[in-house]
Image (cartoon, rainbow, N blue to C red; front, side):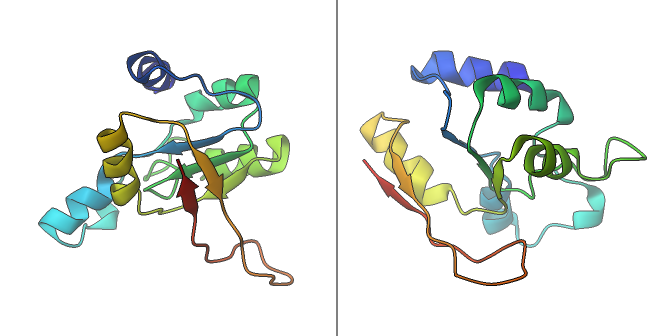
Length: 139
């Protein structure tokens, strides 16, 4: 999958750089919207652990996806969620799970523009590891 990210950079004319938010749309939500609820036990696509060196090299600030960001079923017996476990703990990368990227993808396609400012304000919750958010893309 790192090759997919590199190919997308070349095809769309951008480069993921230090401090960027990297959003990856797999189409999983679109599929669910068209076909109905998906049997999660059948597995799901997401970034593979092989992407972690690229994320580290590029020093991204946040990773978001229309998936849970980890492949299901897990690829490894000892590390169930390598994207979460390595990105958050070892790299300090914020994670945005199960984002609805459909409208954003359409807005990017219409503008033929794949870079924008992203504003995300989590709720001020205490003793938690997550929060609902309402991301706003500013072109």
